[in-house]
Length: 229
View (cartoon, rainbow, N blue to C red):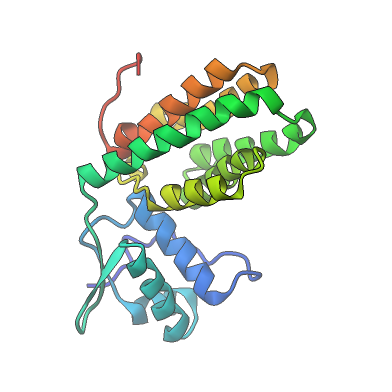
């Protein structure tokens, strides 16, 4: 079984990235967003043709994704997208809730307003990704935005932990949210977070980040959320 249908939205990234990194980033985004559903078989030769590269960087990228438990090798067939359990998703979200909302509350007290234009641009990229249905752009801008904010606290270990946890998060219902109000609302939350930081409102920043992470077990997992959440 090939991946042409499930991989329709995957495109090679900028040439500055290595071929291996290009493939890993694109396939990772497709898996995280749910464009490549659990159980989908990924053929290395098919993917190599799609990216117009040799099989070597594709196989290396898939082995990297296997280490992240995104795929599993299937003898003589390729790689299968793994199923993420609700417990694993919930556990990852729980750890993120312990780290990221308090971090944003702390950041509100020392926020550097000079960086606001650049952060607003990143938030605009997230909104544009949601509006245009470009989930790769959405996810890349989202990752860059949150890690940039976390880095402002001056704790490299915290940035590393947050990056690792976010890299483990699977948003299996995200692709189904294309053109939905929920995706647009979650994208706009990045500007709302910046509003709270700009005001120096720690409690609001904490609450917004708590709600935002909650989408990983709600909307982005294909489950309903109440307006109160």
